[in-house]
Length: 258
Image (cartoon, rainbow, N blue to C red; front, top):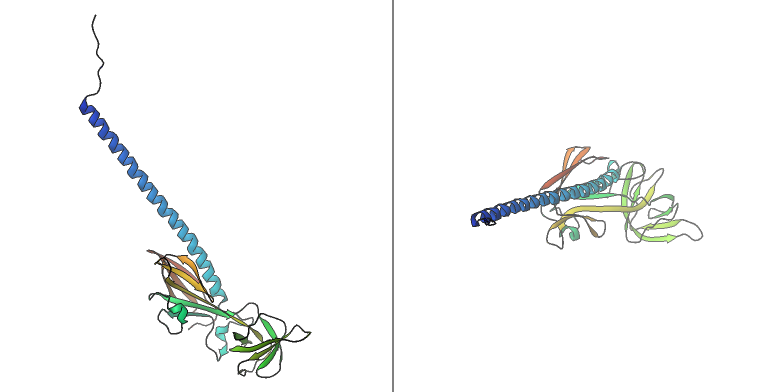
């Protein structure tokens, strides 16, 4: 009777199979890492685009309302109190409030939006050149600047006192100094809305886009630059750089900014 012996793999065959298996595993792992990196990149790109879209919608809304007054854009009116509307400053401008300027990075621009607050009222009666009566109650605070405007001019005053008239829904406003202009028709008065937009250092050691309307709030992280370019007197381009990617917003502007 003939004996049959089972034959296995030789050492060389085992070594070749192990090497081939290791190579396949390495290739699969490299492919996995590549797919994972691409996935993370596209997820981050999508998140960036969604975030920048929200920021651009916010900025477009602020641009559309900059210089608001019920009659005509404030930038088109004569004034004795400085410009209101959309103002663009270089980062080293002395017009930037110190509390904001110390946080602003050296590159790029700082944007300032200002207008009449939407919660405004009209003037019912002028008692003197320093005391006016409003037609309804609005939240005006003593010591704060307020805006007076008609369809021809405007000026900014500081309130020395705000007094509710007894048994009537009116307010008596006392200004810090006499009103300069002669106002006609529908005269409005209200607080001044003011918003600053800038890129500054955050607590994590990087830079972010901030808004400041009395306090600073982080609007978008990892922003390196915000820059404004005037294409025409009625069209601007706002560029925002996130890491190495640059995004642009084109927006028409109201009034006169020249």
